[in-house]
Image (cartoon, one colour):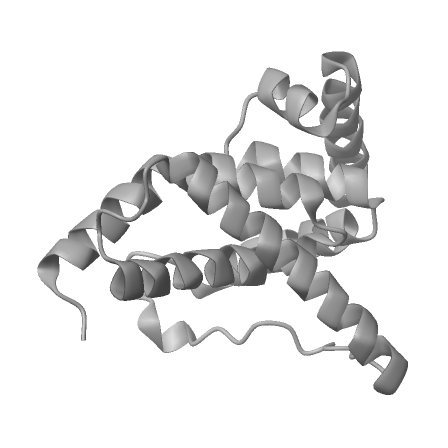
Length: 179
């Protein structure tokens, strides 16, 4: 069972390291679909370490969590490689996410508008997932992690102009297709 000090220390470490750790995992992942799992596993492991070793065990928060992330990445892809030899890991989900429209108040939000926006969002997501991994990583880091173009360029070892080109060219393509 965890005590308040453990939870408090975990929150402190999480809040101070989440952005660089998420950026690191994003840069190192083979597929963007793996990012959330590895990110979650990293912080679950951090919590276990705090429970087992105590709140004073970690000296350098960032270095420790990045080391955990690196271990999780290595284990994840090693296990994935082994599983591919045994089982086919491909699966298609054509259904997509389910949305319960009864959660929306009809007076404040027209269901038709929501449906149109949802379709446009699904089209944009589908389009981004069809792009090369580098474009997916750039979009993820820019829009989800909210890194700057400069930070993305440094993290992915690209020039700033390449990062801008990935973003702006893809946005231009999407506008011509969906708007």
